[in-house]
Length: 375
Ligand code: GMT
Image 1 (tube, helix red, strand yellow):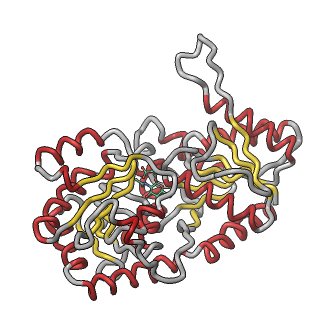
Image 2 (tube, protein in one colour):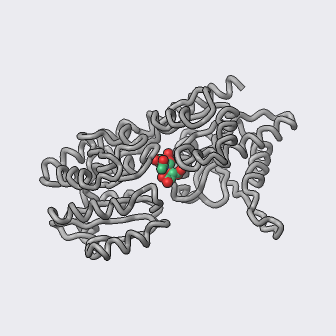
Image 3 (tube, protein in one colour):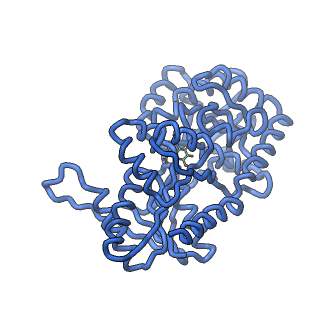
C-alpha cells in the first residue's frame, strides 16, 4: 500500500507512535510518506520505502497566525495526487483530521477518492478537545473519518463521553519492540550517574503540567530518605524551572540529574531501576511502556489508560493521582531488596511483551485493507 502519515514531528508520544508505525510499515514493504512541518524526531536517516514531505509555512505579513491547516491540506492534496497514495492515516485530531477532510473533499472534486483514518492519542480528546471551542470540529472529524482508532479502551470511552459520535472506534494499543531478555546493566556507564550502591529512579516527559513532575521530585525525596538513590530527569518543557527550584528548596538537587531532551530513551532506561509516571491524565502512557520494554518497573498514577499498561502489583504499582505517599511507599516496596526488584523487572518485561509490534502492526494493516475495500 502507499500510505500517507500525517503527524506531529516533536517529542510527544503521538509523533513517536506515528513514526515508529511508519518505519515498521515501510519495513514490511509498504511505501510510507510522512507529511509534517519538520523532520520527525524518531525518523532518523535515509531508509528504504520512506519519504518525507515538509509543509512549508508562509510568513506573509498579513498573517498574524500562520494558516498551518490550510498549508497542510494543500500539501496532502499534492502528495496524494502526485505520489498516488492509497490512504491517509492522521495522528492527532487537531488539525490533522480536519486538514485530511479538507484534502479529501478537494480531491473528490477532482475525481480522486482517498480514505482517511484518524488515530486519537489522548490530549486531542482529554485536554485540548474538551475545550468547547474545538468540540464541533473534533466531533465532525471523528464522524467524517473513514475509520477511527484510539490507543486505549479508556480513551475510546472518553471520546464517547465528550463528543457527539456513535461511530465505531477501534482500540489499537500503542506498541513496542521489547528486549528478548532482561538487559545486563552496563556498570561503567551507570557510574557516570550513580554510585554502585545507589538506585536510579527515572522520569521522561515533556515536563507539561499534566505530567505532575513536582510529584516525581516529592516521591523521590521520600524514597531517598530510606534508600540511597539518584533521580534522572529526561526531557524539557514549561515546568522544568519549577521543579529545579523545588529540588533546591527540598535540598535534594545534588541527587537529581537533569538530562534535557533526548531522541532515544533506551540508553537512559537501560541504567534505571524504576520509572515514575504520576500524570494527571494519560490516555496510554507510552513512556511507561518504553520503560517496561527495558525491564524497568513502573510506579504511576491510575488515571486514564495507564492501568491497561502498568498492571498494579505486577509490572509495578498504580495509585490515585497526587498520592505521593502511596507512590513513594510503592517505589520502596519494589526497590527494598534485590529479589523483589528482580521479580518486578521480569514482570515489567513480560507485560511489555503483550504490546509487541509484531502483534499490533497487523491490526493497522487489517484496518487499512477493510477501509480500502469499503471505500
Ligand atoms: O503526553 C503528552 O503530552 C504527549 C501526547 C501526544 O499527543 O503526543 O501523548 C499522548 O499520546 C501518547 C501516544 O499515544 C500516549 O502514550 C500519551 O499517554 C498521551 N498523553 C496524554 O494522554 C496526556
